[in-house]
Length: 190
Image 1 (tube, rainbow, N blue to C red):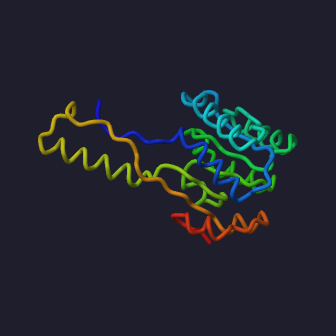
Image 2: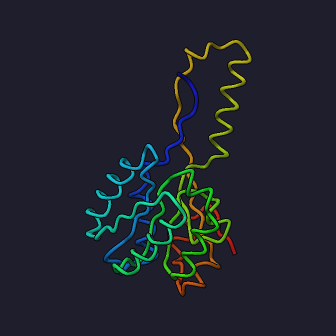
Image 3: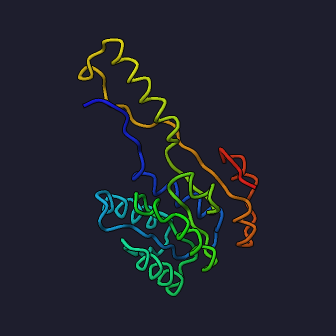
């Protein structure tokens, strides 16, 4: 096998650390995962370890339909979740606008796994820089076109990540983004 592998499921602790920096008084945090996604259990284990490290109670909600996502948001807020992390899953990308609207309706800070959520109005995202991954894939394609054998090319992992903050979403939630976070951000959306 050859190609570029994106790191998407192993970033839970970093997402949680960034969210906790923005909302420092958290005692409980929600996690929404899709039980039908092959990496859901890996994501859950990663987040459980991160929550333990930060002494946070983790409220796990599993959702694979829009109705279940609605119920998950309600359950997290009813159980005292002060913030939420949306797991990595293609289905969640497909219903991105619905998830962002729920976050606004419940007035809960949410960390998302990819930039597209923050660009569409979500609070913030941290994840693989897919443009860089596509660039790496293009380099591989060029090497193969020049005669390299795919079997001789190693699998590469993503090495570039992006942290995006939507200042409008933060303002709507009454959150002040510390300068330290603004300096860490790859992009600030206003």
